[in-house]
Image (cartoon, rainbow, N blue to C red; front, side):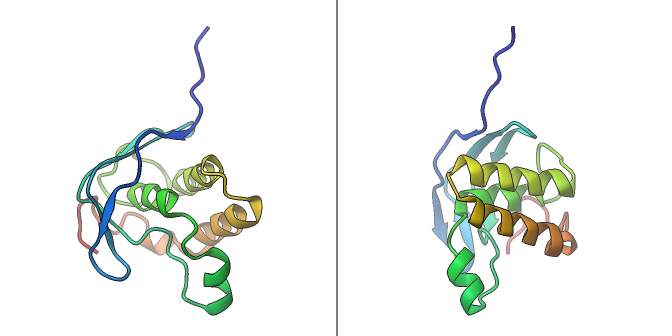
Length: 132
């Protein structure tokens, strides 16, 4: 009988600010996903975490809520990421990671549906180590 691993962040998120909106990983971020397997985000990867519009009510409800999860999602959206996943799987891994980190359904589902509806133009536009 094979043991089933549960999704989890294997390493902590360690990063430094490049600007007010861009952060660079100072150590790799490793996440195990039941949907995609091991996701290894390398040192030097640049992210804007979860891209939430700076609209007053929207940002108050969803801003600064999903940094770890946003890094994984940003990475899976890049050309050259491993594992290579589809748009839909990248978004589902984002949802999965938010659940792993204990985000409530009132936070994770609106954020998930927002990426499903609005992020397609950004899918596979940048490479893994491209600067933001």
